[in-house]
Length: 142
Image (cartoon, rainbow, N blue to C red; front, side, top):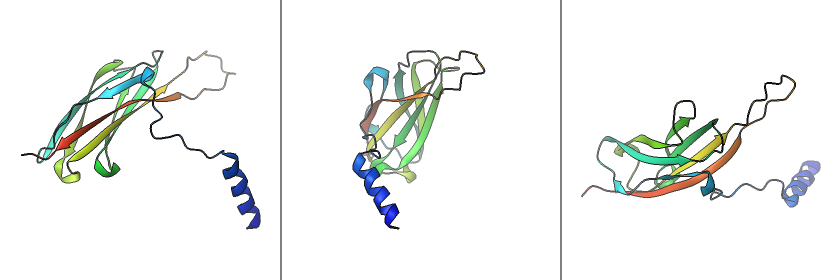
């Protein structure tokens, strides 16, 4: 038990377990945007726009919608095989599953390196970048 405490103290003290800040995004790799709106009764589609700048033609973008209080409300994925680097997406949001307030769409861009077609070269994982998020409000209907 003492050995575990010593190891935890050494690792924490060395700064090896430092998490990336929530605002660790880079606008050079793209952005997401959406204007304010109204959270209508029932279930409705809420659209957003995106633009990614991966630097090559092999990428995947995932867009995560978070509602007030940080609850996850949905994910939309875009893939370079069938989507453009600039486009639109939509979420279906039901009034019963959230409340009016501030919402955020965060975009995760995974950029895949070129394949050199050499069986001796180990596969390389994607480079992950976060794009500039969208922050908007959905107010209660009048």
